[in-house]
Length: 190
Image (cartoon, rainbow, N blue to C red; front, side, top):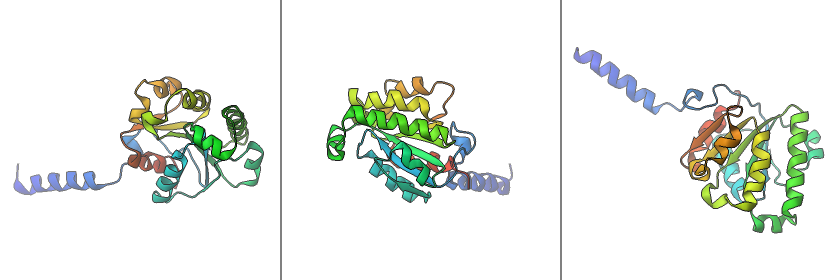
């Protein structure tokens, strides 16, 4: 091969490596969500604050209400609901809500979002530390209601998210929390 052709191939490969990931790199093949989004917690873990930072870094248009109730969706202008799933007994206690009441709030919220035609994106970003009996109650209820799901790899060590998403819900797995912004941002129409 001519040297100039080799240089062009290497330059093209370097440019491709520097480009941001497109949806082609993810299981979700086309954007499904429309801004603005409403970010909330299901389980009241501090992971919702990490998701907030990720969404700010990704420059997504959103508001946040960790305790939003179904009837409040009508007063928001949100077109997409982003739920961060992870149970925390400390977080539930601070919010003054029991696990059962949180489960009922979440069920009603997801049902209302579906009724309103909102897309629902689920996140589980706390990894293995956010798994266990409490979190799994929220996970088992909420994941099947999502239109798209992103999980940090170590949180899916037992394959629960893979099983719950099946072939109907696109599931993207990232290795680190810092990688959640890529697939999340790509899920939104520009």
